[in-house]
Length: 279
Image 1 (tube, rainbow, N blue to C red):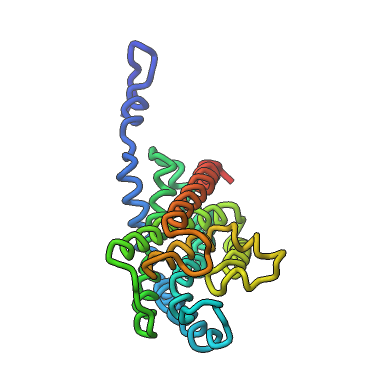
Image 2 (image 1 turned 180 degrees about the vertical axis):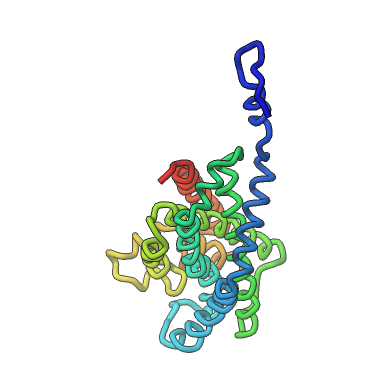
């Protein structure tokens, strides 16, 4: 086929090709679908995401929990579960960077960059698929927590808000892990980078009260997102402000939303910028 040139001097075939790209929504849905199918063809990912939360929760509840004093009238299981749900996002999310790095190394991302699609949409699709996989793990962990004695004490509206906040946190942290995968040169390096999030898990109020830590470490534990989101979920699920946290439920929910928005803005920008660059 011979390309023709328009009176303005442009190539007609080129001009027609510019409008042939997929829309943002189509790109997001197809990228998410492709990633979800990749998960389905990797049973280990599904199994890990399903049982990780239950195994860790069992150990904290029955092995470690007996030695932990919360300093409140709460049973440890009531203190533990809301914060544990936040940290299971990080534990399960540690598989994401390796998958992203593998896609980059295998040329999948180069192929996507070559297509006439919005590049940001390709990363958004990946984040939606990762959020769906992490949410499955959260659902299984929540059901298991009920089996080992945890009970919600808040009203229906508070519980819905708690899980909405948890979903927002899941989406936000998925961008952190995608960024780590895009920064790494290979899957092994990406897996190593995930170790950087472990301090967030343990230096927080997720498993123990921050006031049980050494005085010099408490400011670190108090002013980080895992503590803030854990306090918000604990307050919502208990039906009132969590004992010992010093602020009301609205304060923690608002601060959690700010943290999630900030994480999403920072790591979303970095991930999209990094994806758009060729290695």
